[in-house]
Amino acid sequence: MSMTKQELQVVVFGLGEERFALPVTEVREILDHRPAFRMPDAPAWLVGITDVRGTSVPMIDLRVRLGMATGETTLATRVLVVEAPVAGAAPLVLGLVVDRVLDVSRFGADAVEPSPDLGGRWRSGYVEAILRRDDGFVALLDLPRIFASDDADLLGGAPATGALAA
Image 1 (cartoon, one colour):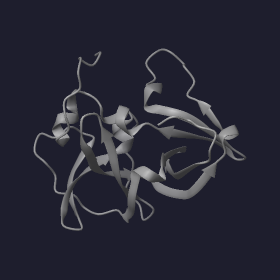
Image 2 (cartoon, rainbow, N blue to C red; image 1 turned 120 degrees about the horizontal axis):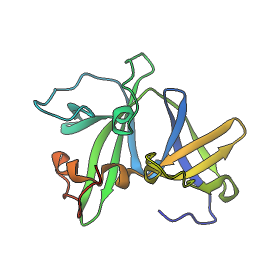
Image 3 (tube, rainbow, N blue to C red; image 1 turned 135 degrees about the vertical axis):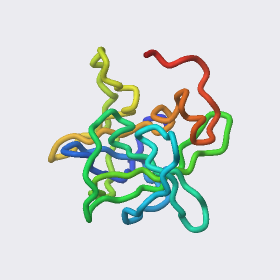
Image 4 (cartoon, rainbow, N blue to C red; image 1 turned 180 degrees about the vertical axis):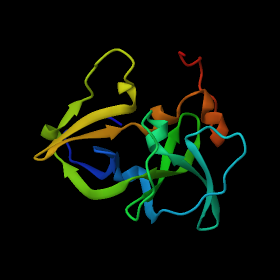
């Protein structure tokens, strides 16, 4: 997604104390948390599969996928049903488990900053931009990068080219 001089509309959600966002164009719907069918030998971030309107959808613990500690399921826990673009393939439909959905917000171009390059082990590549608002910052996530790795083939996507650095 290119950052143009137009407004950016996003769904803002919380993981722990941090706030993240995804473009509304990538979010199909927001559901209450539901149990998932656990898959044998699945990675820790893959909660399992769930039924969404007659379609089997992989449920992802977004906290674990982003390298955070898993959270406790509460009444505020939601599942964001998203379409993650995949290069050269149909979009992945995923259910992202988040701690809470906060709001849908619009950010003007003046409130969108490039992701800072902190170096080291922090995966700033998962953050497309930093959104600035009166009460602090929101990290705009880059879904294709989060799921463009060697384990994306577990979800039915095309395997990434090149190996991940260990």
